[in-house]
Length: 291
Image (cartoon, rainbow, N blue to C red):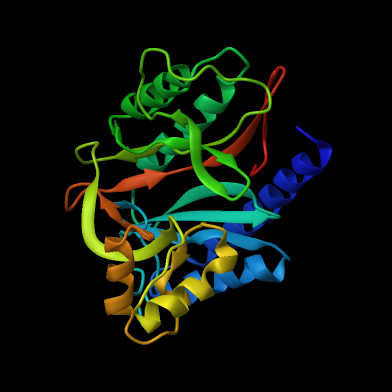
């Protein structure tokens, strides 16, 4: 890895780590969901970086892909388990990190994903496999009486690329990608009181661009122009001020121009915790850019 690229990753990670900590402190009973999301997203710009994806703030059984809508009226309630997932990019090089804020009495659940993350990081070295990391994650979560979410995984990162090889499972598997020095990826264990499997809800607030091709709907053309500088990274419908979004966005998804990210949720009434760090594999372990 070139020194310049390494510094971009380190800079993105440092910014993300600081803002995530600040943002977690804002989450309290009665606080506005929309105001917190917009405040944290604004801090990224203030630090001279850019968002790699809309701030994910997912509550209770919702594990991922939720963010504020334009007129979101939600407030945090006692007992909520809030997953705060932040992506920051500097010159396209991404830091992806997450934490969980417990507004109830769920400290053991929160510990499960946190300790699973630390166990996976400790297992990193060239020659280890993705399956080794998954086993470490599964052991820590199940040892505390919870289930890892089996159909959510960590993922490799590259310039303007949020998901690529290697895939880092949250359960033990045989083999998997062999880790090599210079690999960059995010590890994100999810611990749940539910089924250990997420499914898609109808709610969709996040999209990304898959391809460029001509579109006829004027509102769709305007959207494509506005997201050009995202370089394919995800965006929020909240960031778009165009009229007729409810017509244009589904049309772009049907045409395979955009990809939609529905909220991913375990069974109703369950609780999910998440922790995440971005790492760079080194000759004797790894550097955690988002520590």
